[in-house]
Image 1 (cartoon, rainbow, N blue to C red):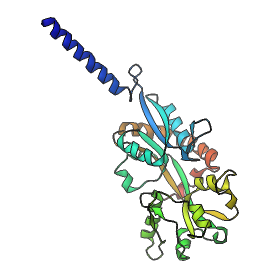
Image 2: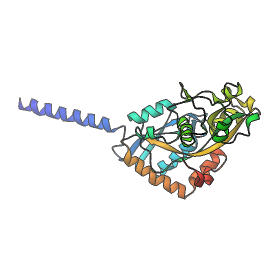
Image 3: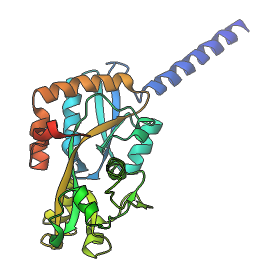
Length: 282
């Protein structure tokens, strides 16, 4: 009887050890103590983040995070390509420790994610307009012309940008309409005359219109992109990853001091957006 009881306790102990080892396998290597980090990236957000022809993660945000990985020996990054929606839900629920998607800061997002102290990069936001309206340079110009804007989903940070402008300029607001989808085909809507203009990120405009293989390259002489703001962008951390976010802060601060982020901005955007950092308000 006594031997059976001892064997049973030993079996229970072995089972518990196995379960604990399994639980920790996703976050750390038991032998090295290195914590494994799942970095989700929007694989359809070129040049900020995308998967190349070989399926490898690349883009401005991705390459910055690869340099962060090199500076943090206690972590090992695994880059996982996904959709924008899955990234947001996945990071919030802990499926991923951090996500990169050229994300802008919004008050609503601070309730779901940790925003680190150090932003990861800068992004150009602008208006898509027909060539005949290229004299419209600012949101104030757009509003004064009483132009119609392509709808933007209320949970899209671009909506927040226009909403902030409207609150600051109640006498000259942009006609802002919330759309049902996260985004619409802004270039197509402008070209078809359904709206007078739309908000777009410069990288997206370059990919869709300027690039020779872009789906709207045939409109390269018919539509224009007019920048109205340069905005800081951030990685989004799961709420339980404050220690990791603090480590990220130290690494990115070092990369900025070494001008590594400036170099990557030039490589991926064709311009060093950090040159206008002093004028960035958001």
